[in-house]
Length: 460
Image (cartoon, rainbow, N blue to C red):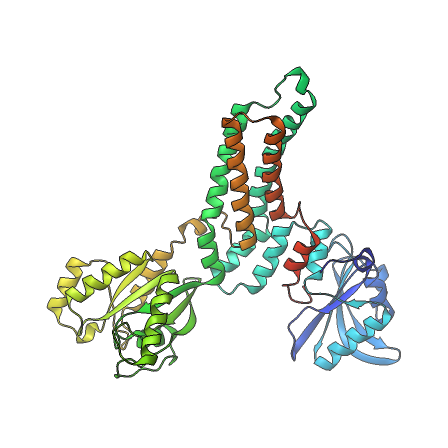
């Protein structure tokens, strides 16, 4: 979605609120002529004589025909989201009214905005960098406290600030080494190799921390894929229903009822968990059930968390220990969940508490001790790093650029150790600067911008 110079000068218009009938709708215009065009169809105060950040009541008219009574909000450049003249028209939420108003402005010379064009103009006009612009979309789509906080932190420049600081320090050394190239015949050193090595090692530590935070960031943004696994009739579907507080999965005393996985989302402690109820794990001659068991095993391998659920009244210690050994070999974090405490013998419960003290004891059917299970789940996700305000990488594009930055910085260190010439050293440093610049938009291509902003909704 690259824009020509002419398109960038256009006044654009779009509905900024969701489609559908509602109490009000907000139609947004941005561009040099936004206020002038609005003034031509507005019956009320002369908008071209009003101050920025003011609201005015009147009517939108198509000739003598009144389309609607509206409120006009004025944002005069550069004090607006796009740093252009921006008008927001609050109309009644009728789809007929919305279409009539937008069609009227298009006839007057505005054009429909492309997806993300308002935010792209804000980026191109220097309102914020590319990482902050992407955070706008993340904020709109945030569906939990954790994803909201991560997007807000990034939109306010927390992540960008760290990247900029890294880049500025590296730019200084790059300029010194480039300067040495100009004085190559005089054999002078403007950039201490020891200082450069210390800086690159420090940068690598920060980059490594940001890269390692992506696993947590991905969880925050997309939810934690959590598999509920165990034997048939352990109560997996009952547990899913209890957590969801609805009858999502079919519950039956017949073993093997669940033959494929059932998935739904639950917000626990501000984090979205994508719980997956799977087919019971057992040997079976039923072809369909066998496929379900196979899919369960695949889901367990790719999960971020496994709830190993077993029936206290129908499982012995040998079987529990065998299953735990299998889970350990998978290498996926798991919670041991003992179900049906209301039907189990006290002696076995006490033995289990002694040998596996981290087991959570519940009754899915009676909805007992589910809060203990939720607390354990949150503990394993480990949001402490996020809650301390540290920057967390949530964007795969940023993660990819950071990985490439790390590779380039390692090349710089290798070059220092091997005493390579300044021209090759400068190339490695420039590569590091390039990948860091890709994150914030200091290094961009039209294709990159088109890909990013095309994912935004129209009107944002």
